[in-house]
Length: 173
Image 1: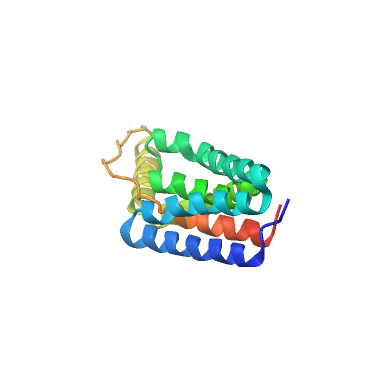
Image 2: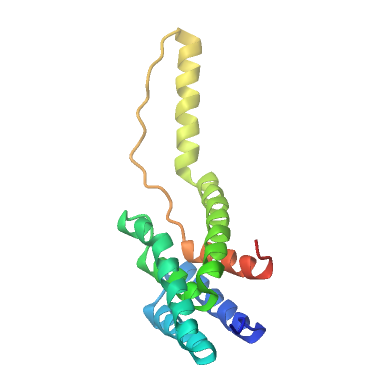
């Protein structure tokens, strides 16, 4: 089977950078970006490898979507993120999208920790527990202070998918 070449990987990197930019600016990844890339990956593999290539690209597409669909169904992720991972899979195939998913999950976890550390929610929680501790040390009674209603910050997971995929291609697991 023909391997994914450097021009193809450069094209994929360009698409991933565009997707990350859309996600950061508009908080969405447009279908006009992800759907043609999905088809392009399958066409690329099919043109060079026939039915085996078609199966390779399609398998990567469905596996990429499969990795993230449950998070979308649970309301934790947008559909654009799921389609972006499917587009990655159509170009990298099943094994490549698995590595991209693992790297994206690591990058996504680090990104989430960074965003949470900078958010008001973490600062409010730390302040609340500090007040509970001070109250306990001063009075000997544990007085629970309920949390304020606050929304957790939203993540642009397309950024994590883009960085994780590029990292996985540059340094395969």
